[in-house]
Image (cartoon, rainbow, N blue to C red):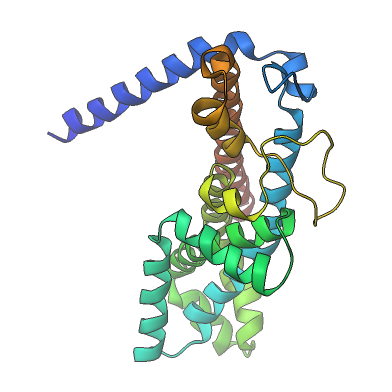
Length: 271
């Protein structure tokens, strides 16, 4: 039964990838990757969308990575095991399952309206950062839990402080898992449409963003418009498939980076 379930999933994935690759690969070329859209998005490329996706993902990482890892370290290494800590953990796990559209509406209220940041890269990055934060905290805390307690006890018995123990005996063994979970969370954020739909993404911009307070084009939103809202959907369908292929390649590259980084760090740790 398990093999049948795995086979169904693999066959479904193969069919989807074949459909996207067969219809999207002919549209992907150097012009498609390096030029801006032209003539009502029916010609040209997706370079502004690639740049916008990179910038908003970078903004997400700046917020989610250090804060998420710090929160995980506190919960696993410093916080007492009481009902408050358990409530916080339960809340974090519940936030991981909140639909992304809810984060998008929350980002509009908090960052766009209340903080008066406007629709821009900063607002979208902060919104995606909040959405990624529960994932980062959970993955980082699970990685910290895999480190045996004997490593901590041995270091403390030799007179090391709590932070010295964490920095020298815990983090070197937990960082591969922490980074892997974090990068996977960022890969998920890079493919989200709903949060950036309200907080900064634009259908078409004739220029690249010049600051964090500019609007931007993004691959997920660009794909959504091309596939559902364009005035000539049949004409731009090859471009939509090409955009989907580039987005899949971006997410795959981020996942591959996580795997390679984890392998490299584990290899260094063993040496």
